[in-house]
Length: 312
Length: 270
Image (cartoon, each protein chain N blue to C red):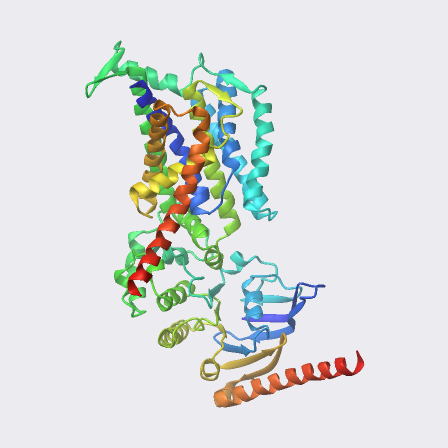
């Protein structure tokens, strides 16, 4: 049961990563590898501050700010200096590796005995359930601490989802979506498309940094390696989410990304439980994303061939 | 209204592919005038429009519009003054967004976009009314993605969007060239309606001699980056399609002779 709740919580935390990837990859068609660096950046910034006694809420908010700065730099490299989008992300990601080491001063910071957002969630839980250690949930015994973290995470992600949805329905958010859809058109309507890309990447990496900050607080440590390959996790979640909701409406895609992230974590948990070597996880995820990206095109081609054969 | 003072533009300067797209163009367009522009491929007619729209910056010369020096303005800033309809019907609209969302983007052309809710109820009625004027039945499909519309419908929508906020200058860049004849006729009809209702100043590049002869009150012919023919007023009214075709043939003949001469010289002396 703890394993299930744990993967649900991680799924929810990483749904912010998925939403960030959704903004860069799906809205702007920008394969933004900065994600790998800004995820760790969020973790390292918040961990250092928490260890030094800063309020964890403030620490997480500052992680967001650092993420937006990283994203804007990638955006500026791409738009103002005309560096290829993939390369711009790689440059910032590589630079962030050193930055993260500098911030942390070492490669790993444990947070096990510090006050984090998880401590907050647990104390809210014990306030509601009193001195109970575990509660009965539909016949399962669940630790109160696990349960309250799960509920808090759901509420937090719900709030983020609503804020993002509202943002994308404002004039600014609509212009941002249009920039990814047709940038020639949006320029002709008086929008500075370069500014939109920079702003979008800032928002994307800000969310990813929060995701990293939350994961560090949940697992009880920040590690300089923890961001490696997260872009692929995010992509996998977005793709699963799109398949789940099957809609292009912004609201549905946001819900889909969250659902995709949770489902992806559950699948990972099941695979590990069934004996998958954790070292193979990234290989399998990459293969999964590859198949998910290629499959729709292949199916279309197959369908066209069949129709042609039927018509002939 | 529009004043172009001796602008030039060369692409790929100093390479084998050097193209002198615009060579010292001077042009003054009065308010409310509709100028048709024709020319052979590579004559610089599209380059002229793009230089005004800000797709590229000119090498020299100055452009002013509605009393403002816009020579160094980036494209998105000029868009506050200029409505632009492109040759490709896919260029002017965002396919994955609904008709209403596309229109909202046009409502705020040239304005700062803030955090106000985009699809306000007060706008929706406006959308219905003005889309109904197109006569395409799109007013019932405001929530459909634009990608589901035909080329002609998309071009009609682009036209409406480019003129939703009255532009100081409307640029039509071969805006019927990619359409079937029926849609092209419809778009021309809509263009005429909107332009006369709003009394717009228009520059229209066209590939169709018929449109060039029939539409507008002034006609420019471009060749090798220069304006070689400029008629307005009663002379424009008298211009016939045959006459334009004749002029084109003349140009083509001259070009060919140049080539033949060059070939002869090459054969004799190299």
